[in-house]
Amino acid sequence: MNLKDIMVEADKDLVIDPTELDIASLSIPQKHNKYLNLLRNESVLHKKLRIDFKTLYRMKWEYYLGKTDEDTLKERGWEPFQLNILRQDVDKYLDSDDELNILRIKLELCEEKMKHIEAIIKNVTNLQWNIKNAIDWKKFVSGQ
View 1 (cartoon, rainbow, N blue to C red):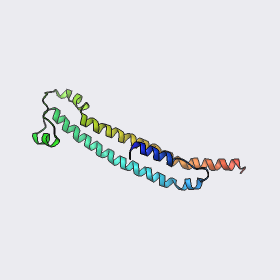
View 2: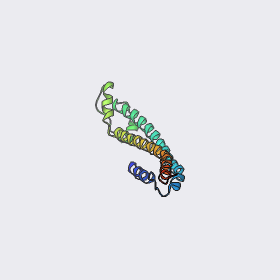
View 3: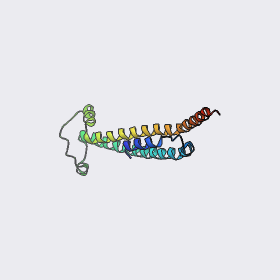
View 4: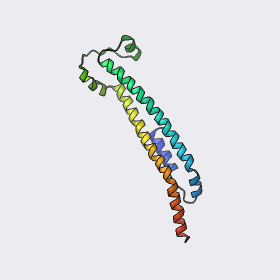
């Protein structure tokens, strides 16, 4: 599920129909579970992406220092790196490497999705208080 889909779902799930407060109250656990499962899935994906990034980072580090063997070059479809660069300059190449940057973007997007889902979970948790306040307001207005 992408971030936009999550936002659309949350917009629907966080609406409370004032005429059906009982149904809204009873649906809170299911909504909470829905977003908790989404968070767990994103967390697993995030861990996998982090491992993939670290592995690729090491491989690229070796590549830019000229330490990559021929088999790995062929397996990855990389051409031998022709420049001799100083170890202190490798970070400049790693920071601008297209493959690493694609993984960086995926990691950052995954982190943003996790933050957004965590915020949704907090809002779902607060639904019970919003429902309680709506019930109290209805009682007050009706003179109870």
